[in-house]
Amino acid sequence: MLFIYPDLSVELSPEQRAQIPAAVGAWIEEMDGRGVRLQGHVLKPAGEATTVRVRNRQLSRETGPVADADVQVSGFNILECAGLDEAVEVAAKHPVAAFGTLELRAFADS
Image (cartoon, rainbow, N blue to C red; front, side, top):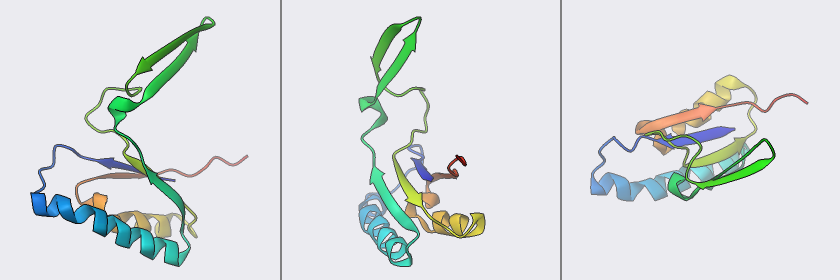
């Protein structure tokens, strides 16, 4: 799985910001064409998240992300790659890699 974390402290020009959707679209088209991207979505802002906890049988429901941090996940892609090297190559081509962080995490064996 590929998690996408844009770094909001990186300053992009309006022109650079305007190019992101098309660049991501081209990445999606390439990875779908290669058959390595199975699914992916952009997430709503972390401030719109709902955090749920149950402690001592008491439900706690809060608005906002589980952790207050400058870096929040903004999207994900489920990948099916031949191995870690291919997954790293796929992630490095994602446009957000130029101004954010991408995290690759394998599914646990069941």
